[in-house]
Image (cartoon, rainbow, N blue to C red; front, top):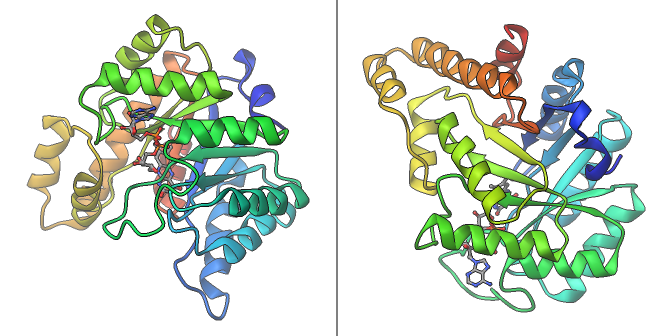
Length: 286
Ligand code: FAD
């Protein structure tokens, strides 16, 4: 089913889960573990599972095989992420063909982060909006794009970032998936600003349960996101007790989820970090 049909008002909030393919997997055990985690979340009837794509594009064949297995063996609608920062038009065409051949209907079109080694960057695509326009003209895929309630890390301000998000929408995007955030008000303000900018397509809210200090430190080094004082205090208080940090992180995300659901947002996209248990606890208790 395509994004346009999935994100109808009567389906809200649409639930989706994000996973990433293992970096290496010579004997297939990591892929089997990934598929097992995904299948544990099937009982929550996700509208789709999304699978990330390295900005280098080197994982194409293995990534496609995992996408095929989620789609065919688990029978779950899967939306591959598709980065373009290092891709040529020919490579994009090849990947689109591979995805089309295995029956994929939806793509999350992204630029990808600028790597330290800028070799082969910006060959045929500079921004995600160019990839969206290219896929839209070339194919029948339904297209999602990324949005940033805290602003994208390279953007001078949120207003400019939303102007650039509008380019992706005007190029043919059907749905926006947001970067993870911890303050729901930030998401509601973002939605209002999108409306004011004439962006009316559905927006799926990205949430992620904090499960460890290592994870939160990694996030803070990668993206622009504010952690509320309330959550920070808990993380600091339980610094030496991993179980309590996880419990506090799940409780926080569960409250976020309950509030977003009550506000009837279009969709809730869970960043699972390839583990089903934290997300299961949130969904079981709501
Ligand atoms: P763009 O929309 O191209 O924006 C990049 C920057 O350029 C922004 O600051 C924007 O404001 C600016 N900009 C855009 N257009 C213009 C223009 N015409 N003129 C001037 N400035 C412009 N990364 C991965 O590598 N793999 C993944 O699988 C992945 N999945 C993600 C999923 C989600 C839901 C999100 C939110 C992010 C994901 N990312 C992923 C991270 C993403 O690739 C990075 O945030 C990247 O830096 C920007 O990608 P984008 O598609 O938003 O780029």
